[in-house]
Length: 363
Image (tube, rainbow, N blue to C red; front, side, top):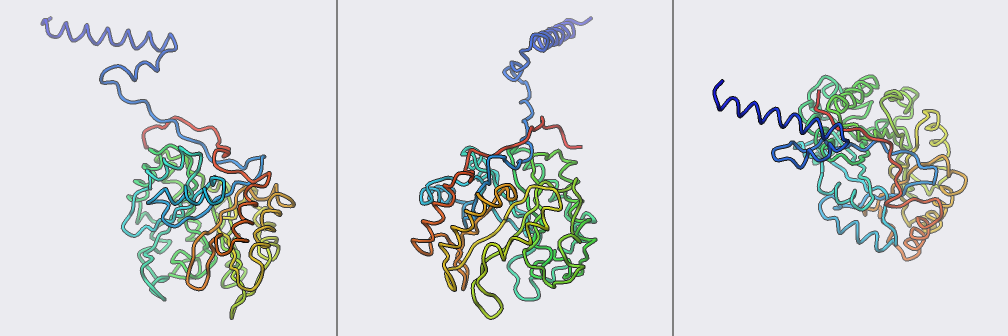
């Protein structure tokens, strides 16, 4: 046997013996320190669980995905850090998962809620809704599989818990994934949701908490367009959500109480047997007492509905004609601060996350 081959075999045999010894002796963790050893696969978080301790609170804070001081400043104003922060991402341009922002949040005990929207948001009018490129049948048939798989891999690499809310408010007419627009059907919706879920599973991105969220008001209000028509199935959903706002008085809306907005919706959502999230809510000042509305919100979540609602997200943004921010008045800000401080409202560092798994290569 040539001398070079003999030396090589000796090295391989020695390495095998060392590796075996470390595994047998329970010190396999030392392998990662050996020169040339591959890094250990990450341990993925499990899904976020409904905490028996109460209701997680969170917020959508515009710009937080780019500048995390936005979160820090909001937390300073409120006096507590949110357990969940929402980030909206559109598929146009195929942006990557915001890993840097997500890691910043995770390091502070906050989970990101990614609202993942398949459309081009820069279009207006009918063109904003009628986007054939983002038709549900296109998604279900694999038209975006490359992007979806890459995004799933990026979430898997992040490894922390991620709420993923996609195809939300499907029972409305304002998004191209709505079940009654853009050539879509409820069956297309179910197929698209299941396809996305299956792709993430195939990539091993099991650290995703799948959040299915209809709108509080069904438009058009027909039996065929009710949320239950879009239900993907219990094995495809981890949490169910609801979006509803107190728009105040206008030509088509009026001031509404928490009970008017949510009692019937929460009863309907409870039939799905999943934790419930109020995924978007807020109130205007005009037409009533916003501070009192906020107080009632948190009194209800920590009182009559303390077991019914697992999370609530405040949409903290000013929009034309509707300023949803907590800071619209000193009284409203004080009510919000007092609300999230109530016993039973859970802040950063209080998330209950299920057991995860060691990441494996994508199949």
